[in-house]
Amino acid sequence: MKAIQAVQFGAPSVLTVADLPDPAPGPGQITIDVTHAAVGLIDVYLRQGLFKGAPGLPQPPYVPGLEVAGTVRALGEGVTGFAVGEKVVSLSSYGAGGYASVFVTDQERVVSTQDYDIDPALAVAAIPNALMAHIALTRAISMSAGESVLIHGALGGLASAFPGIARQLGASRVVGTVRSGKVAAAAASRLHYDTIVDSAQLPDVLGDEKFDVIVDPVGGLLRTQSLDLLAPSGRLLLVGNASGDWDQGIDGNRIWQGNITVTGFNAGGYVPSHPESVESAAQAALKAVAGGLADIEIETLPLADAATAHERLENHATDGRIVLTVCDAC
Ligand SMILES: NC(=O)c1ccc[n+]([C@@H]2O[C@H](COP(=O)([O-])OP(=O)(O)OC[C@H]3O[C@@H](n4cnc5c(N)ncnc54)[C@H](OP(=O)(O)O)[C@@H]3O)[C@@H](O)[C@H]2O)c1
Image 1: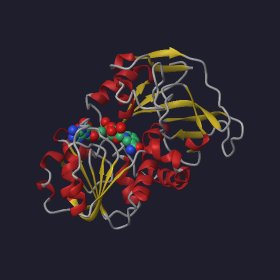
Image 2 (image 1 turned 30 degrees about the vertical axis):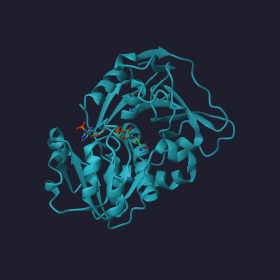
Image 3 (image 1 turned 180 degrees about the vertical axis):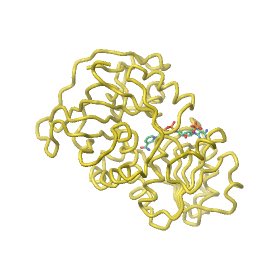
Image 4 (image 1 turned 90 degrees about the horizontal axis):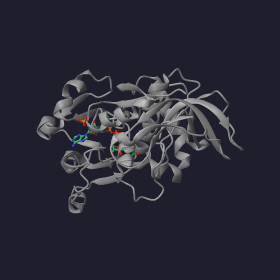
């Protein structure tokens, strides 16, 4: 198969094209003929070696990429409910292997898109994150219909999945924040925000408005500022740290005195220990994406340009998601 390998930790240039043996599915696994592979900030962190000491994470040489779209190539022993040729997407995991023409994963991490008319680039860009957004909002913080939601880094790959799912769950109001340089892109966004504001103007730009739920994939100063933007008994949902500020902490006494709940949600750790959460979230995500609730910006690049994709993510030169197009002959 054609693949991109990270031959060592380091700059985007460590990503090189390779010809590797096709993987075969083990018991309970599925192989997928990949047409599209999503690129996320987590791929950048892993390539940089940010988590190189963490157990279970890939070591060079490895093929990056957590989420793919394509068709079922072969079924491992004991796999039921899927047919060869069926259109599918895979869910992100701690694993790797997505930047390749053939991908192998556990059956539990595969979602059929066969019954939906969803472009495969949109499918891989939006369905895994929409599914995670659904699990996070329903299970991690038990969002209720009628609640208001604030989403930081509103146009980012993961964040983009939240407004549509929040709408689907009956949010009364959905507001996003972006950095000053992204205000124009925010105005043109087709995502389901009531309004998107400049995070540099917080809190004044929101007047006295407070939120029942705040979704934070950004961290840093925005994270601590968020404590003042929560309504009574509000919940702050931490889902990432795109700011790269690993030192900003939250004062426990503020949480106590403000009756605030702070919850973390990390799909890679949550889904394996809660496999029962996937099925209903997958159905919700498929409906949301097919129904136009996750119309995110998508930039496509050929597989061989994976290093460019990483550079663009690192340089904050993109909104929504970058998707690599994959074919054996490319
Ligand atoms: N919880 C999970 O299961 C899960 C799943 C996927 C990803 N993640 C995590 O979520 C985070 C985002 O990943 P992603 O793939 O969505 O990345 P992304 O597409 O690059 O989006 C990151 C967003 O954060 C914004 N941002 C970055 N630094 C900022 C700062 N200092 N102040 C304000 N906004 C800032 C970016 O805005 P600009 O465009 O202006 O830079 C962008 O909108 C990462 O930490 C990733 O590891 C978690």
